[in-house]
Image (cartoon, rainbow, N blue to C red):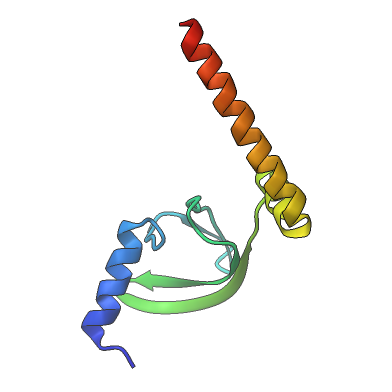
Length: 114
């Protein structure tokens, strides 16, 4: 079991990387029961399942707590590229090398003209 200082150090590193965020005004409570949280999720967060813990704190005391699993997935073009790399690794590798060669050749051609 890690010591308190090691845990605090890990949290501090994650906070500096933008992976742990405290946003006191990001939660909106409606009808004293439901709540909505609007948080920005950094692009560096890895894909996977995470746990979000929310606490209702008043006057320094925790009045209520809720835990919810959140799935982080890729979307749009990033998802297309990731799926292509997973499903067709060989073709993806050939396409990446061909694109690199073409872009390098194109950049060299432009550099010679300028």
